[in-house]
Length: 469
Image 1 (cartoon, one colour):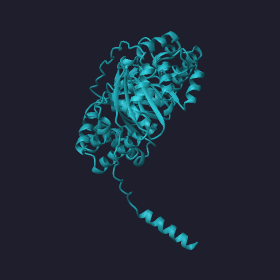
Image 2 (cartoon, rainbow, N blue to C red):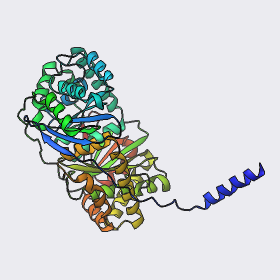
Image 3 (cartoon, rainbow, N blue to C red):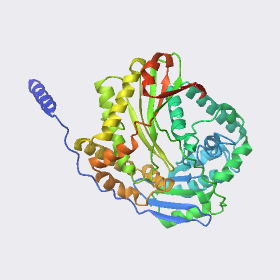
Image 4 (cartoon, one colour):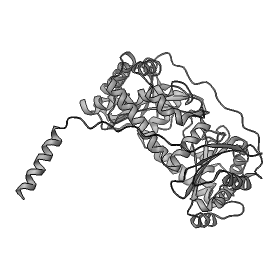
């Protein structure tokens, strides 16, 4: 027993003396499958990638013209309602029948809508891929929108909107999107309750007819497949789908600020401030994507970031500060922020700007850059190991109009970055002089800390302007 204790104590001492973790192993080759692109006569782009690691198929049918902001003038919020109800029954299948068929093939089917697209995602055992494509085709073309399901989706959405109005994080993100993007579709977050309640089944059907069209869509299939056989199955399931007129691209300019502006959402009684700071940045396909992505990782996009070390570990202002480089098809945004106690609202703003300016004027260290590169390339490789992860990355190539070699080029382009590249990107996109500052909190308790940072417009929780300086 004494010998065992001595061994344990020795091991503990050796571990304690280890000052640095062992270096990472050499990066493994990606070994990506050959990706084949074909097109149906109706314009549907089909992308096939054999990945027989498990006997399954993952398929993603994406509509590039159907976004959360589509039809926002006439029917705001309709894209989300359509996506939440489309798989609850078709003209020939009830909701129950759909679920039973999916269960019989070991499958799943769901829809989601975001700022750049709507996607139908389906999975099944590979031996039942024919049935999966048939179900996806039926949902894409013939959703029946049962009255009971539409009403339930409307009620759920309204409850989500009401819950959001009580959440400072939701309010901060909503105001930030509007401050950065103005009247651009990317500013749209949620509609008002009346707009959701006013939607009818005919509105939903018309939306599908207009926006769910094959010549503005791409079907990505990854899994245990044979390319020719799978394409024949897809052609059989989708060839009768009629093409349509692609809706015009709604892309108004984003606002330009010539100085800092503060957008304050007043919530009397709040004991903390939710802070969001940032600017418009680049679309995903921009040549600076890799540099700004890596700069964000170093600044605040990882747990070992500068912002975390400053206002979490050194100052103790918050548990988890954050930053994000959100690059989308038409534009992007950079944001940073934290949720902090009222009494340190001003000091937190100061430290966020301090760290941004430090990134702008000084090069990062070699150690920081090396760690950020390993973080990005490591996560990327893990993501590509799964069918769904690879399918999602292929979809992003088509959604954001990226170079077809984007996946293969990701690691070399990350590894080629220099400290000068990072400083150049930070100086260009971490604009502290014309930043949008969004704060959700109690105005009376923090106004003296906030006003030195810029002109202030105060809003209520419903987005109405209360006062403007």
